[in-house]
Image (tube, rainbow, N blue to C red):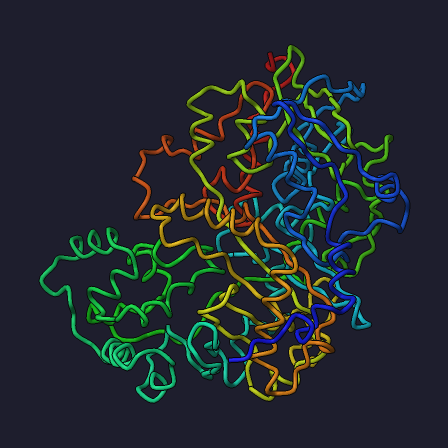
Length: 630
């Protein structure tokens, strides 16, 4: 094998330098010196641009996004190094509500606060990133001429799980899920005639080979299995596995079977009861990197089978998988459009006349997000480091532009992830702080590669490919969503976004789930933008190069949406007990504390948009009236 050099892969081209500079925030950075925190100021140009009409528009930034440089250093100094943040400047600003985090839950909290306490209340949202939306990050490309939108993080609306509160919320913002579904022709790269496919790379398997219509969830034929480049013994074990129809648990009762399947990992189930060899089991390792964000070894057999992974035929069930059936509604920029609807509702002067029918194309004036006269203000690049109760409400300290500042408020809502809250609010009860630390966020990556055209993929007849040996476990074309005023036909040949979706595999010696998640997070943070760029260029060169794709000319832009703290922690068979009602960590963690409430998807122990909204609804309902705050 002759590996391409960086120059041959196009790493030398101007796109690298341009994207890296655009994707790197120059916001406040943290440095720890003798246990104290010192702030390094942003450049004057960067600070000014955020308040100059038209000059600051983060959705078009490429390079390293998601948890970008400048967004997390202050929080890491606080939580990891124990940095102190003393002597903040008192701004003199007073609010009815200060919200820590301008993601879906934070913005929903502002919406519900106004409904409960009145539209004349003054609200400040403080956001550590350079854009609002949290994981609902808008990725907007113009490098190919016409605007192309793509996914930056959370994106599905699981409408069948909506509570009455979320249904009312969606109705108020004009979100018609049934209409959205009618305007979609997108199925995560499973629509093309040869999809889904699986690509085996030479680095891992000794050969570059694309096997069309290879879906591990479907009953594989012997001919298809023979194309998989693993050992002969591995292929024979797969043939035996997919050919079986006996009940290996015939001697156990239903409850005994359920207990057994809940106590072993899915890979162990494949080994012990499916008879698969190690190289055959490896094919399954990253199957849930996008959906769950974890390795299959972290899932019990019960959880994996519930999610339609193969194996129920070993219990005498017939093969019934007919393809993916997950009718979630999407906007062309994921739930960034939902976020934009909320921002336009809270700050109508930022984006006048925005509706659910035009939100994807609407223009937003970022310079108007934080106007002094506004009833609602949204302050970007502002990392909160302390929140405490006071006699009249709460005090909130944050770092912005190289300075520590403090504002006062009647109420505060912490709409950030759970594990940082004990550091932001150290006066919380010890039991609550321990509960907040229990849930370890699940890392997530969505790397968007804007390609000039789909010619190579069209020749192969695929629009989605699983890559069991690569950094990103899956890639798919993102098109066919015509909502929010944006049109992108399912057969549009380009420019189009190719989404690389997944997580980061933890090291083998990370045994328990939380160790796996922390190790994956650190590996993700250690990877540079150039590491990701080299990876996607290598994959596209080896996968599509034989069909005429030129990595030097046909890659127009790259955006890495890196989320070390991605999905909310959900309780799992192998790692978590069954708690009595009210005693689960997330229920203890989310309790109000004086004038401070907590709202996020962690508080619902479920990584879904509707959960983030529900938790905001709950948190605002728990806030005391002014006379009850002390």
